[in-house]
Image (tube, rainbow, N blue to C red; front, side, top):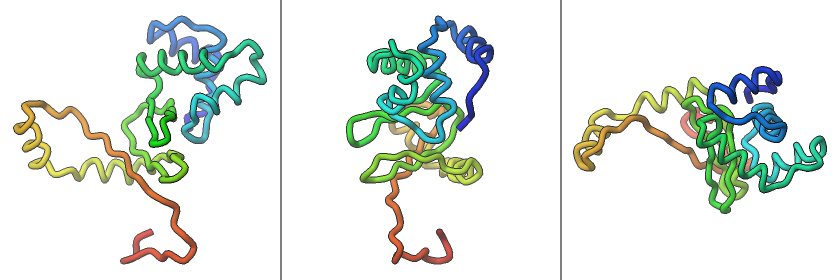
Length: 157
């Protein structure tokens, strides 16, 4: 993901977002930033707990909610009722795997190509029908692993 950051950098980020900087928040945010995937609160708890004996699962959940409200983390609900979290809050697309609810980032170039090819006339029709102004489009792709016997069609992968 974005990689671990220095303690000073985490403190600056928290200060910019008017968040109280506690050791627990620092550790949870840094673990999420260093994560290769999109962990659940439980996975972050298991990762941080060995180095922070006083940490509770409730603290992890509360911290993630605070970070989400501050715009530092995005929360992604899954079909199994739990949520996964991402410290990369840039506009980018995700693929959610059916069965496991694992979430992967779509490569930036491909995600941007998909987002940029939304038909303007359809978006304008939606705006008129609902009386709203669309500010952005958020797409989540849902996929399943390809079996070894399934082959790409028409040269696609």
